[in-house]
Length: 254
Image 1 (cartoon, rainbow, N blue to C red):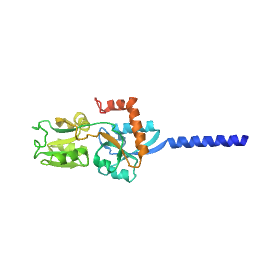
Image 2: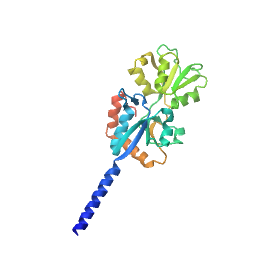
Image 3: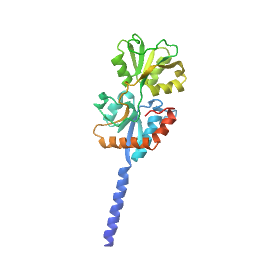
Image 4: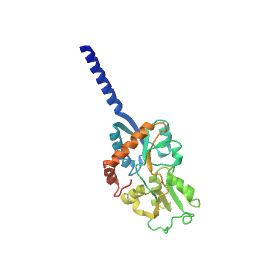
């Protein structure tokens, strides 16, 4: 009887240890690392930014051990599908085209598109007809790039591997305007030396990112997606999201 009790206790400990080990799952997070203030690489080579802190908060809620992997934007979905990482947390706009390849969580923030132009610009109207013949920049493979190609067919559109490169060409006078997510452009205008050249023009364009920004997972990873959805709701409810938001922006983005 005593041996039986010992064996039962040992089995219970093994089950408990196994459960704890299973609970602390390992998750690899893909991000761009070139989209400040959401994700970038600091002087020490560390990934930092809003997306990184949101990812850390979500991992804490999911009781997951998470690591971040930097990946160029153009290859970020193919690398997910190739299982280089388990999810993409990189300020990715939810679109119908992307949903053909991956599944998305609920949005974790919402952002309109906006144009910026030099401070001495004569651009006041951002309608497609008004920008005919203008040279407009955007980051390639983004909703901004798609929006320009769909609606601004009479403008010269230049696409760049990163947002920083598009902004740099605007500051250098090689572009008439740039279209991107408003919050990314706000960071550049307010906090960079080059950004002092330029300003927002025209109204916000809410139809650039109508479905919001989500976290992408492989289509078969339903359990991970639902865990992320639950964690997103939890960090919003307990104020964690608001604290991270306030660190990067003087206004709410969700």
